[in-house]
Every structure is written in C-alpha cells, then in structure tokens.
Length: 216
Image (cartoon, rainbow, N blue to C red; front, side, top):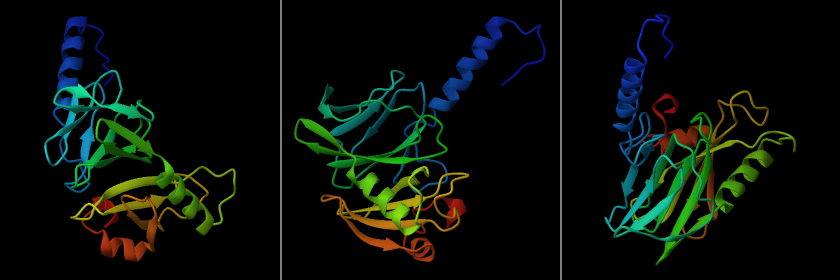
C-alpha cells in the first residue's frame, strides 16, 4: 500500500506492515478462498502447517520457503525440489500417504501440479503426472512447441484416496488452447496414470463442488 503523506513515521509504517503480515498469516492453513474444503492456503512469510488426515504427519513451510514433512517433530528425508514460494495450495489425500501442491511460483496466478508420496521415513516428489497432463492438453489443442505449458491444478481426491482429480487450462494470454475450454482429468493416485479425460461440460458436472466458484 502506497502512502502520499510523507509525515507518517517509520515506526507507524513498520507497525502497519506487521499488522498486514499478521492478517495474511491468519489465512494460512485455512481452506483456500474460492476452492473446495479439500485445499488449504499457504501464505508467504508465515509458519504454514497442515496436518495429514490421520494426524501423523505435518506439511510445514515457513519464511525460508523450504518444504518439510514432519513426523513427531522430525523431518522426513525428501527427494525432490524442496523450494516453494507461496502463495500456494496444498491438499492431503484421505489416505495420508500422498499430497499435492498447486505451485503458483510466487504469483498465485498460474499453477503447476506437484505430487509427493510418503514412504515410511521418506517423501518423494513425482513430476510425471504434471508432465503427462500438460502433454495431453498440448496434444489435444495442437499447441506449438514454443507455446507455454498450460496451468495444471489439483482439485481434490476421491473419498477413498484412490483417485486424484485435476484440471488443465491455458495460461492467461496463452496460445495453447481456449481459456474457456478447460479439461478435467481423473488420475490413479498411486500409478499416476490418466484414467479419464473430461470435456469442459463434463468437468463442470463431475467436479462442480471442487472447481473454483467462478468456473462452476
């Protein structure tokens, strides 16, 4: 926020900045505005902690923008990219063994899907699902190789955690597809295989309660 009054003291500006940051952190770990209850918001410069459904694991990221998976306070070994710049969104599988991130790369205006599997003392990132969906979307829309990849969002999970529901859409101002004609995908949460591709109308029908409010 810009202030025209030069007479405002530095102390007041610092207090205002602290108050604004505190208000932002109140949004951390809560349902992501406009999305379903399955998704939780991760805010910048906050101590974000989101527990798995069974309560045994905690996803944590703070001001250092480094991902940690905690089990009784101890960090699991993590194979993959530990960096994440919020704002972002996280969702744990109902089985508590998988979670996804919608990584907006610091802006929150785009998304790449990042999927992590927990195996005992380790958590392993798998980027194949994002690539598979991006490739399928590009092929369907006959996109040029130079075109930017589409946005890929995780929407949520089936009740048993066996299925992952995903949506892809061209980026703002992109040339790879029509922004009004997004696609939905049903993914096997454990193999990462795309089991079904949905048209825009089918996506709205099947995933209505999972889609952002402005896309239902």
